[in-house]
Image 1 (cartoon, helix red, strand yellow):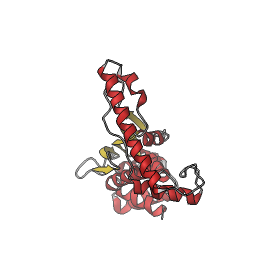
Image 2: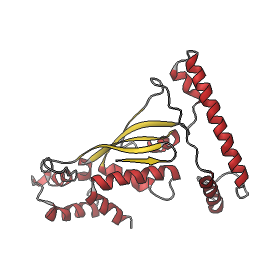
Image 3: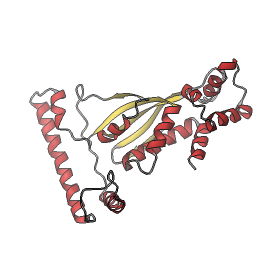
Image 4: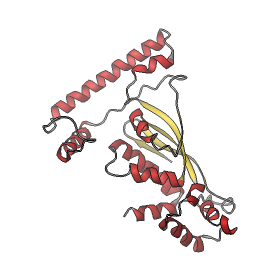
Length: 240
């Protein structure tokens, strides 16, 4: 599974775990391990989903969250650095990001569509949202936003030229990168158990989250829906 996002980003499913003992054969079932973990205290086992779907529902509805830590997945993500800075606040996941100390950064920077910026600017101004709004007391002007975005593209190009010049004359990669903006794309692998992925989605699929990371959260949600379908149904039902 791979989901293309923004202008150069993506979320790609790498692998999952949670098959336990009973889910090793045939079609991979990554939710069996949740049931086996829940029954560990009584030395029970997986009995089949005709019976155990009720147990899964009971665990989820009554906040018995620990068994959901016995399933999880790894994804690869390409996103603007500012998205990663929000993502990395979820310290329950494990991350390994590409290092600009060892390899040149790809020439990819995030340029939002002017219509999206305009809509978000108006929404932020109307709601007086300190996070989503600007600093102006007046409603945003479409021409000024378009001009600002054109200038941003010029800055990206100048920063890339400066970066490449540094590499060319022998500036160490770890120093040459200092002018890279947070709109520059980076790439990482993220690993987490199912309980913590659901916690991530609860916060980042929320309409109050920044628009860009919401897009990534929905892509992660698609990966979970495909890999852990019964848990996903419980999650979406709980969110209405």
